[in-house]
Length: 476
Image (cartoon, rainbow, N blue to C red; front, top):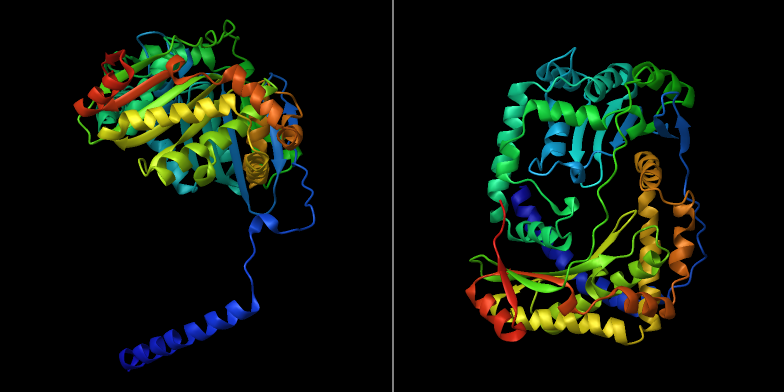
């Protein structure tokens, strides 16, 4: 019955569509969203409360009673930039095996079973600057979950068989990097742009294979102590409960503080050059980059707007518009600005067919030359500022985001009111300021670090167009 009626219903709907469209066309005129006028919305960034335990651990607390959940984020200055030379991968393996390798009271398998039973999630991750542990749990399991988390942070067992498994998995991951051309290209680009700085080193099969349990113990001893740790806490819990529970599980941790962990020196911009990484793929990957202002630098706000206009602003950005829309030479292209507390990296990227390699790189060079030598149009600036400011509110979508974000402001040693003043700082960007940062920071392509990954056709394109091209070998 239904099979006979359904075609009749669909046919009736299709017959009605032209009528509906006609009525809509006659009664409504679609307007450009940029021309819409509406009352200004006032938004004050919510603030987490800062608490310091007696042993020096800093907590940021934000209460949220919407759901019976508790979220905890632990951040330590123990990122991969602290890996000893020829032990690259140590920070990552330390965090991984802390999570999987048990504690002095519980084996790793029992930890997994307990977390599964109470529907808790516990994660560990490492980037260049810091290590991070995340816990999400139903509030009524707070004590049980924090007991496990504190044991993992303070007294990990580093079970040997869990280290063996983590090491083998990491080695297999490294073997497969070459199968992901974009990831492989950015890995090699980082090595070039950081110019032998520890921030640019990455794990290799040989370095990971040589990491032992004793290395993990020594790394943990050096970097895991109260003075090197911050915690963001959010959820269905009161301030009094936070003080009681975190003093109970972390407050008695008073291990002697190790020697001050001095971060490696800041990166220094290497001499510009074009580097070619041979790989038999039909498309070339082109990445160019240079050092840029840090978050602490007042120029960072103007540079963020500049980057948005150049390539990170999507369809309307200059690189995307030129290379994809007008020339049809790349599906994926744009720019990026990685601003850290003490330094920044600015770059461009594109993936194009081998025979278009030189053309695309030349056009990217043209876009950068234009931003450096010509005035930026007012409508571009207003579009970029409006987009950045409108996107700012999504930094506060949850209590967890709010608490962690304010923790990271202190972690990066940014001004206390960085978030409060952020929108005004972006709003104050002018054409003159953009011209200033462009002239001071944006380098010509020939002075930047340029990496091209591609086949022999792409190599010939690069050599015939740019002359001095240095062939490099990828490191696995």
